[in-house]
Amino acid sequence: MRCIKCGAVLNDPGYCSSCGTEIRIYNKLIRLSNTYYNMGLEKARVRNLSGAVQDLRYSLELNKNNIQARNLLGLICFEVGDVVSALTEWIISKNLEPDKNIADEYINAIQANPARLETINQTIKKYNQSLLYCQQGSEDLAIIQLKKVLSLNPKLVKAHQLLALLYIKTEEYDRAGRELKRALAIDQTDNVSLHYQAELEELTGKPAGRSQRPEKEKKDSGNPDIISYTSGNETIIMPATYKENTGVNVILNIFIGLVVGVALMWFLALPAKVQSVRNETSDQIREYSDQLAARQTEINELQSQLDALQSSAETEEEATAEESGSYELLIDAYTSFQAQDMESATASLDQVDPDQLSDNARAIYNQIYASVHAEDLQNLFDTGSAAYNAQNYEEAVTSLAQVVEIDETYENGYALYYLARSYENLGQNSEALDMFQRFAAAFPGTERATYSNNAIARLQTQVPQSDTEEDSGEDTQQSENQTQGQTGTQ
Image (cartoon, rainbow, N blue to C red; front, side):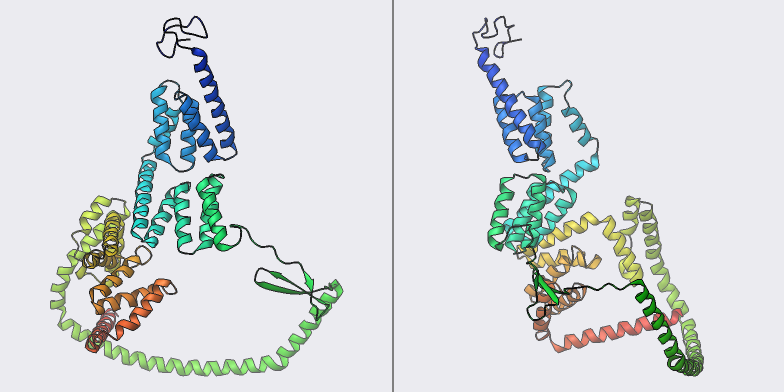
């Protein structure tokens, strides 16, 4: 054994003969550090993680070289979702004891999985973004980010606690109770979770996460043959006695029912059924005759249209040649996308002119674009939502309009909803009215849909009648064009 101060070999277990350092005090610190480590280990086994962390930190304050205590502290941090703190403890442990240290296995297990490292990185970014949204007062955006965080790392206790706090602020007490219950399932003695739970119980007036027992059964005072009892807000009534039928009675009742049913069918249902079949046959004959005449008229009309289309075939071929390039590029992008070659898919898709595509082809284009440019769409949405929160509505319209053009249901409709609000704040009532109508149709029954319906009623009185008539005329023209295209296809 060597002296902790000068490194000399100890001849006397009590003192260092070289520098005079008292070794007994050091030994007491080592034993006390090991005691705190054992206490932390026992608490960790019963999932008292907060108490275990406190004991382990006491152990490391007494002896920073306690490798077992440091490795266990890293495991507990990893269990509650704090991967950065866990890696910090394990790296310090590895530097203190490079050889035969189990911290190497923990670090290698994380570093050997690049996808897991990327997930951890995304979790940290989204959690910090949710904190920024909370500081800006955007609770709805913060809730969305926290849900994404928990989908990536369900054990992050801090995220559960922050989400529960946001639910308490928005008066969604049931959801807040469920989040606190999940946090306490990970760390049963976390002081923050217990404090939030106590606040929630004080707000709701009942213990969080518990259900009331049904009231004691009692007989109906008006009818002694009926028993009623209350379960929550419901009153359940049931007969006091039950008489069980015997097998003979069941068979007899079935036989009588069959006899009565056959008799009714023979005397009542069968003649009516025969007459009904005759009437249906006559109606079908008349219907087929009318359809045949209509088909003949339709054939004549189609022949006339075919003659007209053949006369304009040369003009259409020139227009088709211009559009075929975009369709070929779209097919190349779709083929590369199916083969998971995102680089080739992106290169082909960026050369496509979406204005030359049909509605169905444009839908395929938007689907591929949303997949290969998912990060770009997320950046556009984040930029637009941040500009909206900063009341920079022109910039918000510029970013969110691009997101809605690709996917108007992006982020559960928030892109479409914020775009409508931005148009409304800019005084562009026609565009705002269109966006609110599309949102109310896509997401009915939500609080944002209620606001959208109120905005539609308000903006319809402000939009000039001429704008409404022009929109109606454009819709009619589009409908006629679609009808002509379908007829030409036939």
